Amino acid sequence: MLLHIPGPVLEIEAKATRPSLWKYRYPLFAMAMIGILVFYQLAVVLLLRKSSEHSNSPFFGSKIMNPYKNWNGSMGEKISLHTHSNEVWFTPERHTIQEIKSEYTKEGFSNIAVTDYGQVSQTEDPFYIRGMEWGQNVKKRHILAIGIQKAFYDYFPIYASRENLNWVMDRMKKLGGYVILPHPKLFDSYSKEEMSALVGFQAVEVYSPFGDDAKILDTLLSSGKNVHCMASDDLHYFPETVVQKFDQPFWKDWIQTIGGQRGRKGESFLRYIVTNDGVKDQTAVMQSLQTGSFYCVKKFFQGALDPMVPQIQVNDKNQIQVTSKERYLEIRFIGQKGEILQVSPDTSSATYQMLESDPYVRVELIALTGSILSNAIFRTN
Image 1: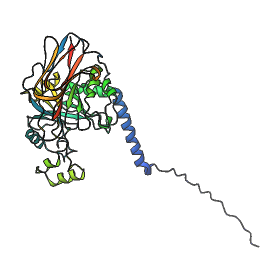
Image 2: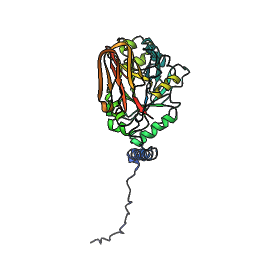
Image 3: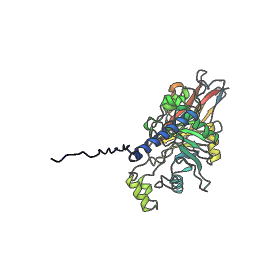
Image 4: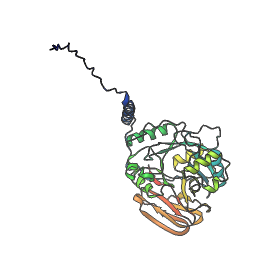
């Protein structure tokens, strides 16, 4: 019988292998980028702030301030202050500045402001008003700056608190801008409560293709803000009847068609401001904006005659006198909290006695072809 002699036992150490993180590189990279973005957003939200401080009762005193005291004429100058062109790199399919200027001139406009997203146009043409629209967030909390000298970066791509918006508006004014809150009813981007809490803006678009609401002005004036009305087309694309006349490249036609921008009726030429006769270059328009010496107009339909703006004077007896060459369906005098103080129907003139209890009065005129809003006539020291 053969003896079985066992051989030596060889112990083979199993090498412990750790799972490699390399195969998770894409999720890890994405998480790192999200972390950096969150950290950045938190940092700017905390650092770039301006507190909300404003008087709750600025309309006080024996003197009556009338922004239309030097007004002359009944037609004035039609100005459009919110248009978008193809100057921005991500909107090459939009219309050129020359196309926009040409079409608005045909419709009797004296000037336009080009307010592209995030930039001020630097073309050599001096005969239009510079501006920009700030903000590219999904909630559409945008801010317009008319006459601003240079653009600046949107530091709040995801979220901005009220204090952050105050900081943005303060910087706009330091750069020479007249600050407007645009389309507040678009996605409810600015509630009435939020607008009442913000400081720094000088006007709000109460006439906009995304919602007309003159009562917004009453809410703000009643909360103690001496802000102005604003009316604008917020032009992005002309209606099809206008676009067909343009000699534009095929790729622009293609992008506009794919994007659903062709064939629309459009909202151009319907909402605008009217400044005094001769006030149409950037310097003169900016002066009128700062003092509120302009009217806001909304035409009811394309092709209608322009409603005539009135003259508003305040006499020694503190009577507000409204006169016009046009006969209006109604002339309304509106006061604190939107209270209708007086309605004068079917007339071209009306007078309202401003009472000591009236901190301010604004005028609203309903014509056959459109409505006209004045800025506030208010008490001051």
